[in-house]
Length: 377
Image 1 (cartoon, rainbow, N blue to C red):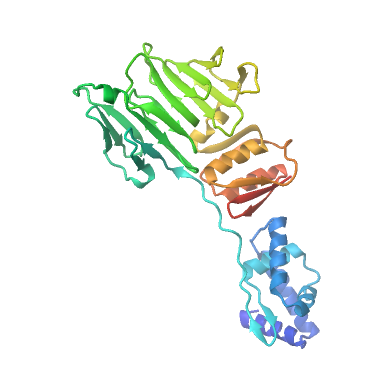
Image 2: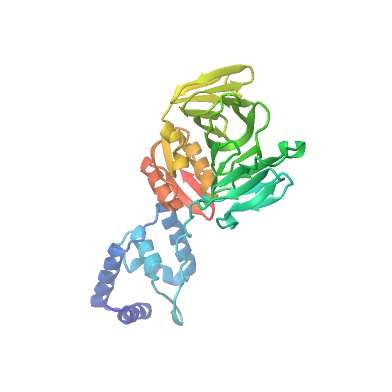
């Protein structure tokens, strides 16, 4: 049946002149549409949509509307109503109700960062097209952006050193949903995760290379046996000569995790010091009496750097904090989720709804309300 025929049948229904034969035709059309609808909503979205539609219908018509298709489940009804824009009628004339469909999906983050120079000037890196020089720090240091968007620091060997330039510091920070890569003046590569910042000198003078990290970063430290590289995160110091490792040190996480992929690092926390071997991860926290060391899946620790979410027996709230930082959302919990754990993962370039579908395989339900995700056990 075409749209005009359907409208004619619905009008007959409103007028009370719908025959048994016509009612069977309307039933058949409806069931066909419901079975072929590709719109899938979870039970919370169905409930909300059903209540919304009821509120839009006049009281005296509501019973009739529900009774016309008694054999169809509520879920199929709502799926069809949202998917096809079904028509309802109110006296004295035909009226179309516009139903707002599902909330627009939430897109993933991307390559975004803010560079703060020593004079306080901020450069929004996402707004800059690939170019050669983006800034200078005195006569000695040129800051460049390559075609791949990576920031690099180039030292001018012919410039005369000055005390002012030697003490210049820059800060690279990332917002919610942002990541950025940088090559420091010594050749060390730093991959900065979302909602993170690293403060570093524009050139490394003296007998140490010291940087300060808040958040998460993966380091590929340029080797220099005469000048150790030190990463400070809160009360923890990491000392290396040249190696690859990941530091997870967000202020809203209770544990600072350092994961070693190759070489060796010395982790110092308060009055303790431990040396890690490849494949090991250290854990430090105010609630621990000593530095904890364990073997871990290093791929899970650096999955974010490779564009993936990878969960290795991760608890639900830890997983949701990752999504909060990447998608700019806020998670709210309705019920006890303390015993829910996740293994596996997915790609970070997917929309939020696709990631939530993966998590729902562990019998967790989600309801999206704008930028708030309601989590149900």
